[in-house]
Length: 123
Image (cartoon, rainbow, N blue to C red; front, side, top):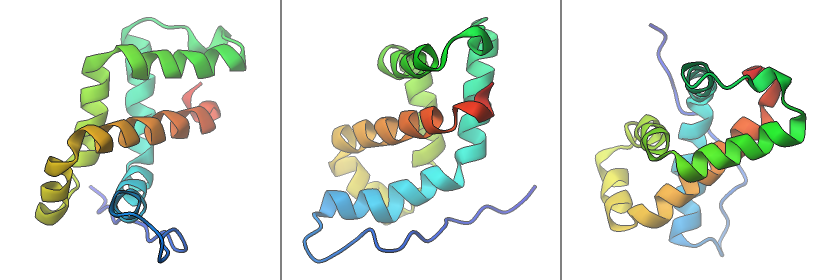
């Protein structure tokens, strides 16, 4: 088992950054980046289990399929959230608990975008 470490993403936080943006850039983005391989792998598994022949779809349809899955499949959305939230520290989780609805939305948007940007890794 290889040890995962959160990447440091610099230049994302400046003086005018809100608490939520700060959390997104200092916690969410690094965790999502660290979990990239697992997110891609789980998405491939999702397609396989549901017998979605992703490879035959044109790029535009692939992207809209990703969007549709993240909009409609609550089980998959919850799985994705767990993959990310499981890496929060106690303090990060306390902030998350107070802002879970907004943070969940951000996690799912960033993750869906990441999968769309990595569509070649999925096929």
